[in-house]
Length: 149
Image (cartoon, rainbow, N blue to C red; front, side, top):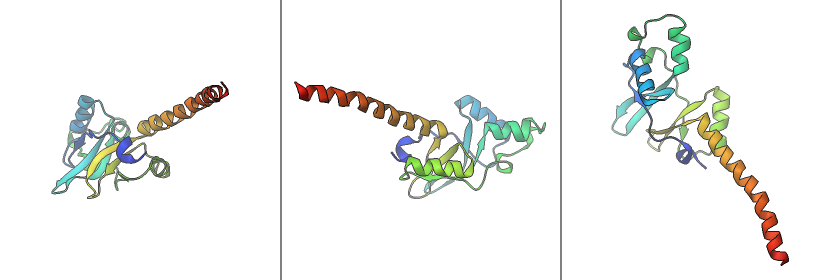
């Protein structure tokens, strides 16, 4: 499996000049825990950074900063740690572990945003793989019995 098949294609994005308050509202309205900060170009949306609900809690709420006066460009995670659509799940997992992140934008051939892959997506893919392995063990005895008769 590669990043293109695992990722979520419907990515909620914002621009650098979005306030943290607006970003929080976008997350709430779209039921997501992150936004990819993008810049529009002729090739599509180009990722500049990522902001998460955790970033907002730790850097804004806990420090009692006014979220209406702070822009996402001032606190987004940069440089963007991203993946290409052709990379496999092992490459994604290793990069996430290396950088201590749980989400990565997925890029197409022109470095444009095509999706986002999260830890949960990798967990789902892994559990599907493990389920298939488990089903394989049951099928083996079925075929053995079939060949004996």
